[in-house]
Image (cartoon, rainbow, N blue to C red; front, top):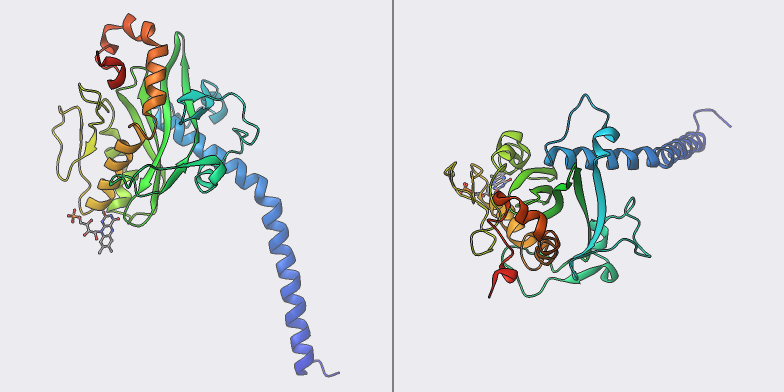
Length: 276
Ligand SMILES: Cc1cc2nc3c(=O)[nH]c(=O)nc-3n(C[C@H](O)[C@H](O)[C@H](O)COP(=O)(O)O)c2cc1C
């Protein structure tokens, strides 16, 4: 057979394809554990950033040692310490939101949250201090203009004051909606209050500039009104009755003594427990 015959050319091409696909598949399989480890590290780094505890000079594991991760059932508002189908190390809430057994229907058609279902169980992160936990980091998300935006929102132990926020996954336009990842914009969230005096979710992103002294206002994102609306909706949904509301309410009741011991922390009580 001639070396440059058509059948020889096809044979060489097929062999090359087979060899290359074996190399690529082997690499993909072998790199999977490394990719998974990097995903976990990336999430942990963002949790620490939200909590204001990230220091690039300190090993991640060392900084993260202060953080306790726990599973919460949003339907009951309780911690779930064991679940037959959920391993906190591998639990994927994005996949759970699509699994009928691990998700619940979002009641009604909510303007602020366009998804029909949300996951029933979430992983929350508690930062341990000398006198119990001192902040809690909650995973939140919502639709922007082009993508679903995922963030971590850190709250002080008063369950009212924002300690920090990080958006760690989004595909909005860089320079417009993508500015949700801008650390300068995220820094403006620190110290803002999620709830008003009546216990309603009041924190929102404005269209223009916010009054720096207004406790519930965040500066708008220029040319990204739809993204900003998604961020406001995210806070409204997740901090309200269909999101973390019942869990935070229960947590506040459990820690009522601790909260009352510090006058600065009694400004807010959950709406339901304040009713006569
Ligand atoms: C190429 C392109 C990318 C855009 N990206 C975003 C975006 O990421 N987020 C957003 O809210 N609006 C984005 N917009 C603008 C929206 O289409 C819409 O005009 C805008 O949200 C209105 O906000 P404004 O009143 O602040 O201009 C983009 C527009 C264009 C043409």
